[in-house]
Length: 583
Image 1 (cartoon, rainbow, N blue to C red):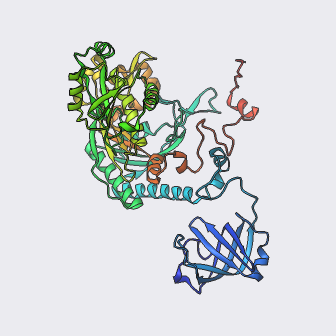
Image 2: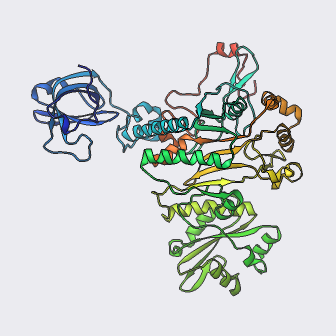
């Protein structure tokens, strides 16, 4: 008999039915003449009971053996409310050992003591754990929800090439050598950016794709070298049109997967976001905003602050409410080392306890400055103020990082909340110290704001773009922009980032050629699928929502990739391996 049901669907409604289940042995328990086996598949676990006659056939069976059992569904006397199938069990009349299994190198359970390297080396075993299977189910739900929602809005799912031309997009490309054109290379796409814009020029109007992307960049817990994004592009659309589509998609995904009705999607311009939170991806689930207190010290006699202000620096702070007693001098020293990672030279602190000030700089501040601080920051008993005086960017970013750290350590974050934020009006350019020139902050096809077009060449530092990010709980969930659709404007942007006409033609010639034949206004986004699923799954590690992830060194411990290749393969490609000695 073939399998009739999964191990997660039988209920009291199936009592007295004869069924056949297939799955892995999750647990075996011997009770004299009776043997109990919990049989597991992707959908759940069902308890199976073997009497003395049948149990003789499973003497050798242990965890992770693959069995097929046939028997009658009976009501359990000792019901287990923690199991979906806890009201019933199978009285087994026939059993077949489909396959045996050696002792596994890791425990197949949600709580496993295996090191991550072991889990990744035996990923096919790790994926048998219910928590990871649920994550992949969730990922499937999200992708299907996106497909159905966008299709219903008239978007077409269109695939774009994986083997494409290397173009500068911020990260290093993964290169693929051509066997036919020796010495030439394809690049794996960092995103479908150029192709989706070409689809708009082609008149496709509304495009989407669950797009595979590749970036050779330093990895971290929320980043993988290969990843998926829900890629969306629209013609004849402005920011509000795009925001509406994305917000509708997010509401649909959260409703269908979590049963959650989302609150308002806030919007904050980039400059305001940086000044309030010290980050362009702030976590809005808690307060503790940055406050600019530069004016309080404009006439200070504290030499360090004087020197910083004379050097066009600024003084910012954050206040941890009712937390002064939680930070010793040693704790504050550790926090000082933390902000130094972000370039800050020092972290000052002031405590307000027993109606008086104490801390690292309270003796060098005058009474007027202390009173202004108390009034401006609305200081109350047991508050502690953390201050960074430095160059504006360093002061803000270091306090922004400290804000997140304190939010976690002081348990200020409401883990049940989902706070979305559109960060808008990003700078058009950022200055690259190594190349001594301005580069595109987003990508070179991002449209500048209309009022800043005249600043592209004359004042790039104060030129803003029509780029936007969607942030969720401190993670950048998507990035997007309204694109340039005017050929002359595109050439002007290339000029602003130091690309000559010849260089632009070399890198983007086919794309610029397309601009000559009628390009519609268009814009879009790329939504990080793994980050979205990671947040929905309640994990902080992106590897938990990827079936076969890479390590932080971009290696696959299971397949042992990357690896060497046969010498004949290199000869076919016209390649030679350069050894460490340069030969």
